[in-house]
Length: 148
Image (cartoon, rainbow, N blue to C red; front, top):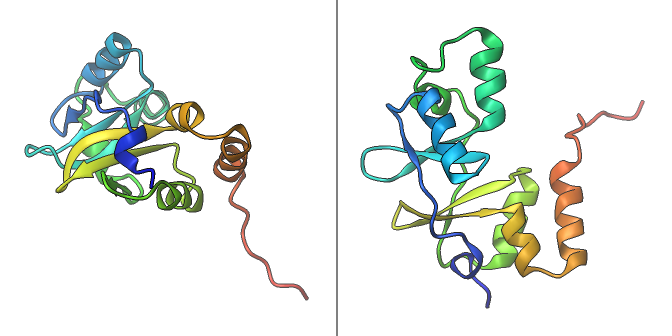
């Protein structure tokens, strides 16, 4: 059985809920990543901030990235999904596809242990599986309509 732990990136860093978006952008630049988990004081993930979030939700609204805190973005975010380090890879893929998640925090007893990204899946899965995943995650959510 392949588990989340076997494909996750364990060197993941998070930002705190009281860190500014300017600090998040600097950390993303230093780490050369496009997203960072947001963690509370005990290391429990409460959200994810992406470079796009900083541009659209902070700069795009005229907010100041030096005074906008990560916790503010985490509060307004959709539900954060996580998986346990021991989760089966098929369950991980199903969750990511169902909720169109591109970055999935991995926890060990509720504390951030790693992250699984599309790139991690591409490195560890057969090409056809990755293709199906990308198609499912990138497909637009279309409203369900009743036929008349």
